[in-house]
Image 1 (tube, rainbow over the protein chains, first blue to last red):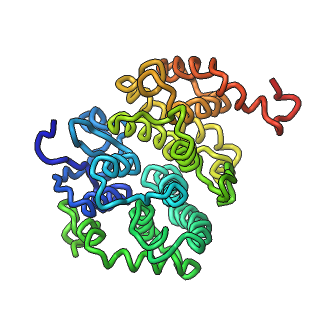
Image 2 (tube, rainbow over the protein chains, first blue to last red):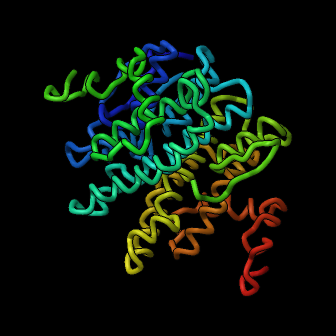
Length: 216
Length: 161
């Protein structure tokens, strides 16, 4: 039922979009990007057209196999089930749960507390402190968890969905000037992942909608 | 993570409710909590993530403490109605008897507790007829009753069913 390439609705700087871009790159899935600027025109995600496509008025959304889906982790799990190689989730349920736990910690416990929408609500003078608090609280827990789960990457030595969540969140941490010294495991893993091609081609500085001054 | 729930099972201790539920699904697969068809599974996960990642974290105790007591109600109501606006729209195309088709799924496990939060924070549910209908149907099921907050070992006497 495939009609042309999958289409990814993405914003270059959206950490959630970056997660999906990494997954598509790792699985060598060729796709088209339709940029959705979260700031221009009051936020293009609020347009009627985009809302019809994705009622959550958020990026990323992926149009694939005749369906349009939102929520980065739901998208990634769909890609995993329909394009299973290379794996993004280990085979062993006791390792899979660790990957999901770490992914949910980041995607549910950190990012939503420091996304554009929330930061708008807390007001400009409070934004930096709020974002820093959300990220450091989460990273405190994550650093501790990684002590027992990490090998080369978040869970053992294979790249997993947890790693797809980690790198964009570290980029957000850097953006909001969070001191990463308390998080040596997070930093080490982030560095190792950024050396991989899929994390580079999907990087915010290399997207069709990356502004010229931020381009790699 | 200094949060509940955490489950100690099969020699491991795990946190994050959806990760726990997916683990239970993989190790105790019947009855199913996720459909077999990947195109339906993704809908279940999308709805679950919308609630568990997009609504609840924005109105949990920890956040409400940060926004300050005088702002709490408005903040919680905004988080929940924004999310419910999107959810109601999505359910128009996914729902049958329950959130996705006619089988209880992980999405339904997320819906009922979130509706309870909505009621707690006095969110007007009139704009959300599909959410309300599904919530009512689910609350009639035994699993949703025995697990209800009013029936737990730590339920305070004045809130007990």
